View 1 (cartoon, one colour):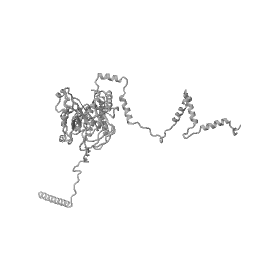
View 2 (cartoon, rainbow, N blue to C red):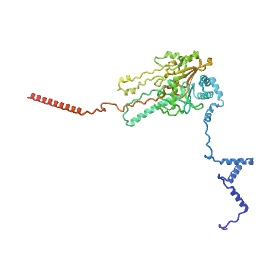
View 3 (cartoon, rainbow, N blue to C red):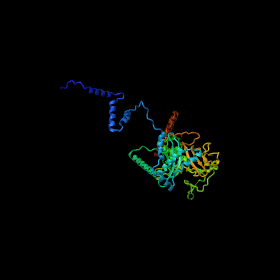
Length: 526
């Protein structure tokens, strides 16, 4: 048989098989044929070998159909995003979880040592009677968040400071004190600052040696006011914040006098992002985390008060107190018997500030910035001593600790505080409520022997006349004025003629004098 031979007719059975196969290979709009579907279905049945293959035949066929279904973006809706409530619940779920055996260990430890965890439910109940309501659900969540903070840090004191609201999120603030010698983060921060200063000094010296710098400017910036040490003044306490109960607690850095001074000149709503820039005028030296810390220091200094006699100065401290020194510590008075609620409401003299006042310098204790180091004194030996005496600053003095509220200054014609009873219907069980008009959102609720301070607000101070940013400073002189660069006025024609005539007369008089001298010399020679 040759290659060009015509094939013989097919067997009728083979022909029917080919017709049937071609029919099964027909595809629809999806591009899939019945032959391919049956092949895949039979292959799956043979590979899995289910005991009831006939019963699951239809379900397996449906699964294959669904597995080939492609979701078109123009047909189906976009997948539903997870709601904020679900995300919030996922974050707070960890607060209510407890590992195996953790509860028994914590209870045993609680019996052995006192826990710094505050009883926030009791605080919320006290505040609710005074008209400041946190809500039971939120109080429970905040209490669990504070428990996580006290369990993960060596704290001696933990207090719920309050809640600062923001445009994009709020901040829960916890005021804490570490056990003595166990605040490692503060020591590391101080070492990093010192290293940074040393590196900056070295870089400046290298740049000065490597490049020929232009003449130095005669402008001298104001001296940098040093910040107060940790555990003193405005940095007496450490503060942690979180965006919501269950989120991670973030430690706020120490506050500097420059940040407090700048915060007094601006008004800025918080955004809920600690790393957000603070774009204001005058410029603020830092981000939102620094502004938050500065506002907390200002609010604490102005609104944290207590009944008269609840705190007292220590006897040993009073004996060793030096003249002119500022008292910065106190202790609870064990003999305090309480003040009736009616008297707390009637007179502000029964309330005192127990947080140090922040001076205009931005510190609680004034520091003389005109005292210079030996190097600076050597560089400035040529300056006059009279100017230094004239520029000597006057020490700033503020009200001491435990000063009565009756001495607070008014805001225009508005009193700084408003005191009232929590209820007039049942005065026997009423509480004394003190509201700050200077910092809206600051409250103090007190019974006879118990009191609590809290702040729930936007972190803005009350301004009766509205806010107006300060004017920019006056422009500085571009160069020193003197006779060398001062232009003289051009003379008039009459002045030039008079000057010319005066010169001619002077020259004529000088010639006459010379002639007379010559004649006298000749006569003497004769």
